[in-house]
Image 1 (tube, rainbow, N blue to C red):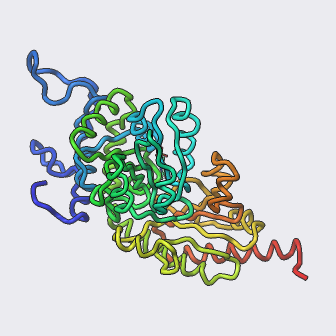
Image 2: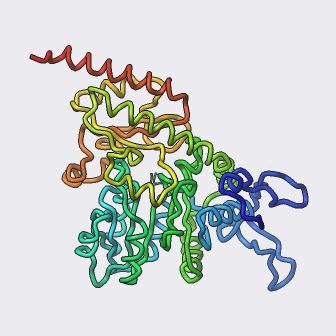
Image 3: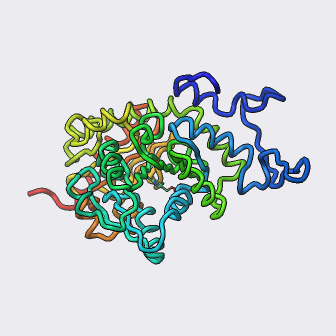
Length: 394
Ligand SMILES: *Cc1c(COP(=O)(O)O)cnc(C)c1O
């Protein structure tokens, strides 16, 4: 699109205007793996599906444009995107990584990248002293998640990028939780952005996908080589499915934000709750940075119940809210990070950051707020009654 429309308009129109021959308002799905060459040394721009596919190209162009990136690469999952990014590094390299990290990323760094001689140090990336203390001669990049999941710790993206540039390090941001609708790290100085598009971008818990966005020509060219060489690329049908979801991203994110804030406030004043971690609340330590660098809040947050014994009955009594892993879809899902998403992170590290046995993570969907609060309220009351019946308070 030539004209610079607002993000809501650009999202709604993804894939439209891509097929002048028919005027279709959705990008066609090209399943073809091979493409005829008009003659020797001529190409339509498409040769073989792994390198480039017309449907995937529409998605990649739209994604790059939304994040202010120079190039985008659609991958078969968020982890495939991360593996492709980590292939930038070589034996002997070192990375500085957010402490409260997505479990799968931690597992890839510790179980796979470590064997290839790429080391990682985990720090609070919002603390300049910790960043500086972790920096080594062989450090190549800083990898951040903000907010982190599940503890919703906020990192000042611009501050990290400035520091990283001074030391010749790349800054990589996992922007899964925020999406380009609320936060665009490349505009704040990041070199690489990655997404598990399985979450908010897809938005309906029905497509597995990942994205890589790059800034700068050399980095974009290098990433194109890695993307094609590793081959963990997104299929045409899934590229279509992802664009289908992205068209409603703006509406969904607005509702996710509204619902999650309302529930966070409800829980703050609930007797069974010890603590609520939501960067949209003024009490949250990262609230001011979040307001400065993002235009809104994601739909996921976490909270601690006062007694670990509440957890099992709460998960048994919720009905509208599903007890399930994953996040970012229209359906509300609740998980227990200590035994599910973060089980691969050693207990000492989990306890040090606060992912303990009282912490629940809530990916708030787009259902009616009154129904969500009623469901949660009923489950909390039932859990408390059960625990009290087991061990009456003296
Ligand atoms: C889910 C997730 C990933 C991994 O993505 P998949 O699509 O499940 O492979 C990476 N980072 C974050 C923050 C995630 O939530």
